[in-house]
Length: 64
Image 1 (cartoon, rainbow, N blue to C red):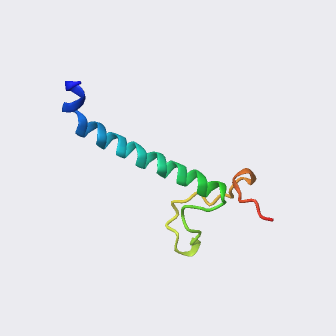
Image 2: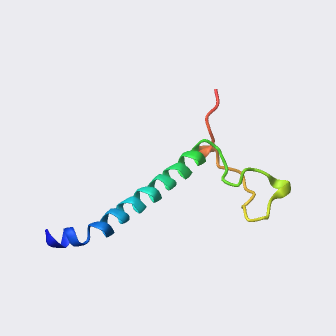
Image 3: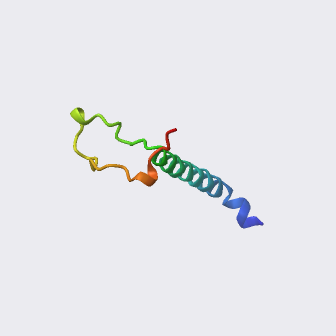
């Protein structure tokens, strides 16, 4: 119990950082499934760092 109390700050900060990383990954996967790209599709102003490939059909948003 003493160890837990002495390291409480480190544990809380670690849990907060882990939650942020998990939420970021969840958002990226969610956007990818909706067919959104992270680069913004501004190809004329592109620095060339994106892959310029099509999103596979399984990740595209389903339109009705």
